[in-house]
Image (cartoon, rainbow, N blue to C red; front, side):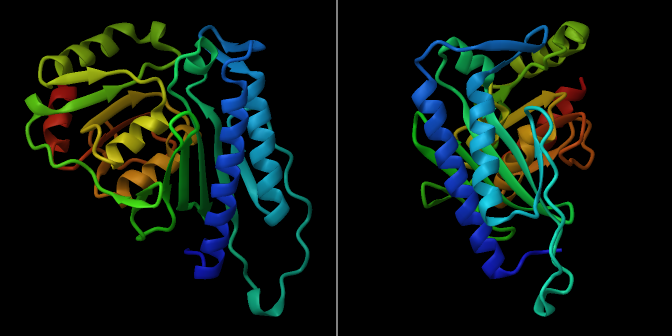
Length: 276
C-alpha cells in the first residue's frame, strides 16, 4: 500500500518539522548535565531522550491523531478511537511512525558529538518516509517517498562508487549485549579489519546508514539493532542506490537480527568476509 501524493507531502512536512524540533531539544541540552538512568548494563537513557520523544509524538498527533507509534522510550498510548472515514476515504491506510528520539545516547551522555533523531512512517507495514536529523551539524537526511530518491539538506545524494574493499571505509556498531557474544563479534571484526582501508565505530546506526546513503561510508554492519534504529536509514540507503541484507545475505527488514548495508558494489565481498 502506498500513500497518496497529498498524504505523502503532509507526512513529509510533519516528519521534517518533528525531527527539527526534537533536534533543537537535543542541541539545547547537549552541554548541560544529564539525568541518566540505565535500561541495561551499558544501555543508558537521558531526560533528553524522553523530552525529544514527547516533542515528536505531540507534533505528529496534532496532524495525525489516529496514527500509531513504535518508539524507543517506554510505551506510547494508543490513538483515540477513529471517527468514521469520509466517503472519499472509505479505507484509510493504517499508518505507524517509528521513532528513535535520540540515536547515539551513549555519545550524547558523554558529550561525544555523534547523535541524531530518526523518524520513519510506514503504511500497512511498508516504509513510505524517513528522516534523520543531526542537530549539531544541522544535516537533515530525508527520503520523502518510496521511489523519490534520497536527500541531504535538499540536495540529492547517492552511494559511493568504491569498488575495492582495500579502498573502502566501513563502519560497525557493538550491541548492548556484546559481553554475551564477544568472541564471534571480535572474530567478525578482525576479518573486516584485515580487508578494508579503514574501519570506524560511530555509535549511531541511523547516522551510519545516512553516511552510506551520501557516500561518506562504503559499508556498515551490526548485530541486535531495533526497528527504530534502522527504519528511516533503511529507506534512505535504498533510495540512494545502496543495498541492505542481513550479514548472512538474507532479506532484511527492521526486525532482522543483524544488518549489512553497502554501496551495492561491495556487498558480496563484504558478505564473504563477514562469513569467514
